[in-house]
Length: 142
Image (cartoon, rainbow, N blue to C red; front, top):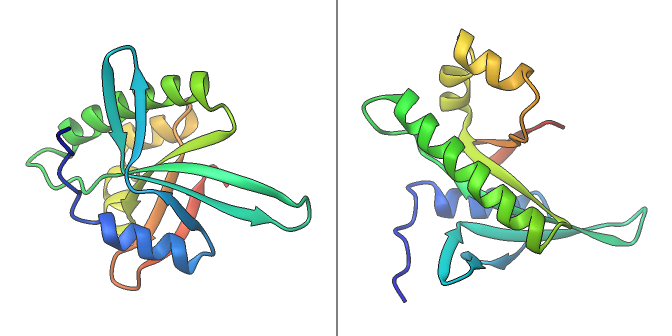
């Protein structure tokens, strides 16, 4: 079994989730469909005390360090849609998030293209984190 290379911010996101009271359940989170095996960076859960149930998420970490953030975004969105369809079919209680730094979020989602992605109905969910403090800044949608 060939494991994918870890993203630059993999451990940073893992620590940020733990600081936010998430328990890492899978590192990586494996998806199997037919003969294909895919890997999402992290699976996590936390107790929602008011309801006494577990909230479960799967997180794909992206650094957006390529020469073109548009190309990186195209690849990340394609990956998100593919993983989301498989997760929704196999484990509908889990929600997929794309994790990116606050700096990249501000760079990518401040222009017209990024605004379109945030305003048009897409299944896109983002976890924005501070890579220095290793904390989660915001969840989109909240």
